[in-house]
Structure formats: structure tokens, C-alpha cells
Length: 181
Image (cartoon, rainbow, N blue to C red):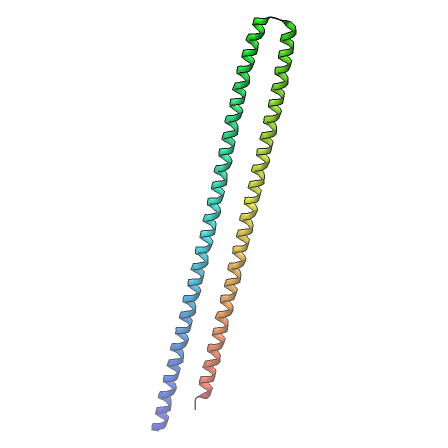
């Protein structure tokens, strides 16, 4: 009778130890998973912040370039107007029809050339801005896809690890119960 009582006590102690070890292992696994998820979230936030900063810098650079070009165009237009006024004054002073026609023709040609150059510059700038925007959007899309894939793979890895540990715990428990008298 005493032996049976001792055996029952031993079995209860072994069961309690197995349950405690199982609970500790599960808690450790949950803590590890939470830490990994927090690290992944922090990395994603940092990457998103870096992308936003890069986009802001690119937008500021583009705005500065556009402002500079607008200022240059305004200066060119002012210079052209001043030249035209001077030429008109000279024409009025000289008062010669042939000279007037020649000068007006030259002015028209110069204005046309300047307008064409300005249009070409604006087109080049627009193309440049479009290319930059496309590159930035593509980079953002690729980064987001990469982050999503990495997160999915890490979560799958964690699930497999958890499953493996649960299987090991079940096997240990079964062996422990089978080895009992």
C-alpha cells in the first residue's frame, strides 16, 4: 500500500514537472515571437521613414530646379524686352525703313529661337521629373513587396519552429508517461 502511495506521488510530481517545463517553453517561445515581430515592425517603420525622407528630398530638389529655371526664363524675357526697347529707340532715331525691317526680322528670329530653347528646356525638365518620379515609385513598390515577403517568410519560420517545439513536447510527454510504472 505504501509503495502504491509513493508511486502515485512520484507520478504526480513528474506530471507537475512536465506541465511546468511545457508552460515555461511555451512562454519562452511566445516571448521570442513577440520580440521578433517587434523587431520586424521597427525595421519596417525605419525603412518607410527613410523612403519618405528620400521622396521629400527629391521633391525639394525638383522644386528648387523649377524655381531656378523660372527665374532664368524671367531674366531672359526682361533682357529681351530691354533689347527690343533699345532697338526701337535706335530705329526711331535712325528712321530708316530698311533698317527697321531688318532689325524687326532679327528680333523676331531671336525671340523665336529663345522661345524654342525655353520650350526644349521645359520639356527636358518635365521628362527628367517624370523619370525621377517613376524610379522613386518603382523603388517604393519593390521595397514594400520585399518587406512583405520577408515578414511572411519570418512568420512561416516562427510557425514551423513553434510546431516543431510542440511536437517535441508531445513526444517527451508521451515518453515520460510510457516510462512510468
